[in-house]
Image (cartoon, rainbow, N blue to C red; front, side):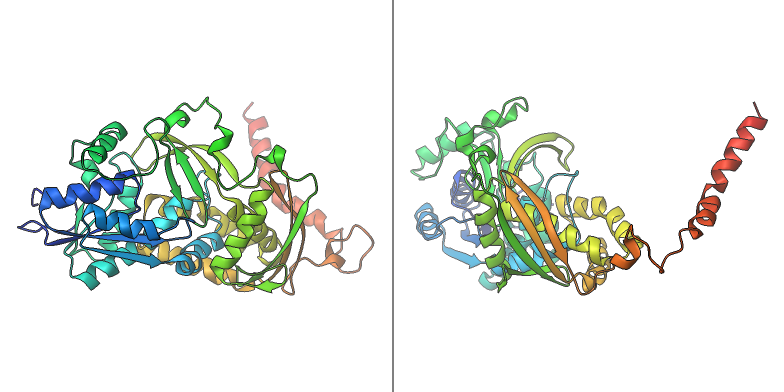
Length: 413
């Protein structure tokens, strides 16, 4: 493999043009300048709007000042939610029982369009700003390889000597690169419409409680309103389509629910997770709207899904969540599981009422025309549908193996 190429296809000469996934933050601003100097070639800055709430106009100016030959700012908000977030939520995907995969699910969406920009501009290489310790390097590069294995991949963090935030700030100052943040309090952050994540700085000590002024999307639960707020979410085929009776696009619905849940302190999580590369890391997450949607979706499924279908799907959640977390969105096994999940969701139609109060999102009601819950069958009152005497034989048959085990144990002392 050519010495300059870190992953992707093997080329015999340096790249002619590189498309860099660019956010305008410290890492990618430095990387943009470094790529130009290191490879003496044109670098295209590509920024994706996945609902991070960041004003992207300064990104264009900042990239051009740093030397980008061209800048692409792509609005991926609707596509990100409808084609990535909602399919993942239909699967009920939660990594290690807590993490709602906000960063992980954004990477394939960003990478997909980055490859498109590479094709459009005639670039022969793509680059990202993920570190050599994290998950994102794997997520980006698996996506690149799955979408176009002919593109070379450059990962500066695995080759350069700027291996600390201090060195990055020094490089930026030396080259007159304006970057956000400060040396004194430089959280590693990622944001999109689904969540905001915080890592590093004082959070590297898992005993340290996050500082309240770090949070940007949710109020502290104890400071949330003293009166509960209710929202009603309508679902079709497992996807939310309306909020309080108003039909909204995928992005509009999640964004609106973020505001409602955020002001009620819903969606904070403090997690020590297992990275794909083998180490543990501590992250703090805000996922306000996503937390409400996951609870609402589960509540509606409890009405509509057959028991065995639900149990089978639930057994697949850890594997599906791993695929997303590890970066296998464009892999055939994820697509196979998605087909099975989507088949199950055909009957998940109806409405859920959620109660939001001081950091908690609880189910207040659910209804569906396709509900399998039959009051006449489940009632504690007298009915003529179910004969309780039938349970005797059912229990005897299911306890037979336990009786046999006990008899053999007694026989053998």
